[in-house]
Amino acid sequence: QRFQRFAPDGTLTGTWGQRGGSADPYGQNYPSTIGFDPVNHRVWIGQEEGRTIKIYTDQGNYVTTIAKGPKTPENAGYTKNVTDIDFFGGKAYISDEQYDKIKVVDANTFVELSEIDVYNGSGWSGAHGLAIDPTTGNLFVATYSEDKIKIYSPTGTLLSSFGSSGNGDGQFSSPRDVAIVGDTVYVTDADQSRIQAFTKQGLFLGKWGGFGSQPYEFRNPMGLEAWSGRLFVSDVENGRISVFDATTVRPAFVFDRPSASITSPVDGQTISVTGPITIAGQVASTGFIANVEVAVQRQSDGRWWDGNTASWETTPSVNLSPWVAPTAPAPAATYAYVFPSASFGQTYRVEVMARNRQGTTSDVAVSTVTVAAQLPPDTSAPDASVSSPAKNAVLTAGAITIQGSATDDRGVTSVQFSVKNTANGTWLRANGTFGAFAWLPATLATPGGTSTTWSKAMTLAAGSYAVNVRTTDGAGNEDPTKPYIPFTVA
Image 1 (cartoon, rainbow, N blue to C red):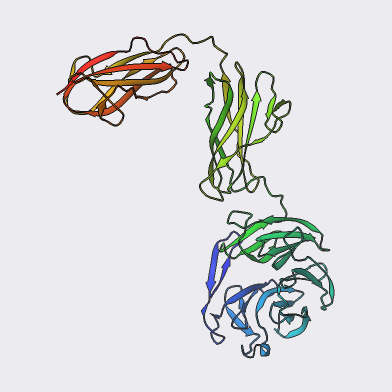
Image 2: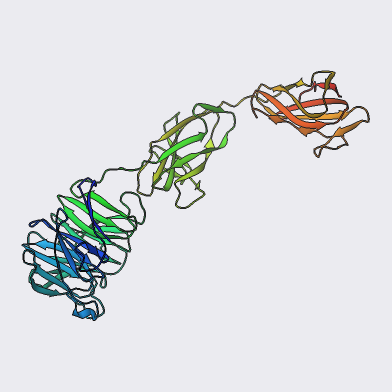
């Protein structure tokens, strides 16, 4: 129940009004539109429920109230529901979505001069917003009941119209206001949460928007005004005024550039297997993820992998990666792309780029991976050792950790151990009981590494025990020495 004044940069410079009726100069009864008279420097405030227009100076000083009239019966009032006020040639043009007319009022004397009938013959006219062509004085009126922009002469003759119902280019589902910058007509569409641009003859030029709260997005845009080449949009459900420069080309990105990273393969990594390589990582964007794009270049000849044709091409190919996110739309996601054609001895350059819903792209994340040359058959066995418990050590009953290390020229695949109760000849099993012999898995600190530590925690009661350890490599070679360590739990 108020109106506010802002500097062009958005700085608040004044606030006036409170809930009240016609007798209160600053009483507001659902103020629904605002117009600024640039000649007399006056602010006109249309009251939706009050059925009046209150006029103030640009400093907020009360001037007068016009359009007084009883709410019931509604047709006895001067206005029913004012939805826009614009000025041209010393006149105020007042659109009223329920009254089905545009009133023309002298901006100096506040005397009504004429009415322009915009009734379409059924229901409300829905004449919500208007703009005046400064070169001709013609009125461009947005009527949401017909999903059209109607063009009237200054005397009220219907000249032409453009638009139709729908969500295609040049169509509307709830046009609410119009603004003119140079030779371009801009229209807000509340239901489509977008703005469209046209020539003055109604030729579609372009659009932007979509439902959301990011820059270039709207949630129920209504009012639209032009000033000094800029467009000011009342973005209702976002609770804000969005400002656009109509004279400057939209930049490639202005508010959010996505990010992309590669977690696997690590840059500079050498792997020893061929076939599929999984390229994985994370992407993020406050503008929400649309695509994750992967390119793979073979360094030996500079060719690029084309996943659609499963071939190597001379020009870069974009491969779309699957990605997964916990929410939709997704501000962050993980991706995994399977590159199926890695070969021995080749080095590959991997490039990953994220794209958000506004079409903005991230910097390119790069990782280089080499597949090692094919090696001769692996005949060398790995070797494992036990560092704890020491041979013949005496440990305290309770939590005990068995640990050690293992090495192999190609890489340790697994370490297993067994614990024997030497007093009764039974063996520790996975469920913690003793019985028939069993190998139990140890945890490797570096799986597949040429050198790794290993460990396993357990609980043992007092008694005499022995631990035996074996390790294997990727070729299935097994440690022939298998260390055997007796110890006592006291």
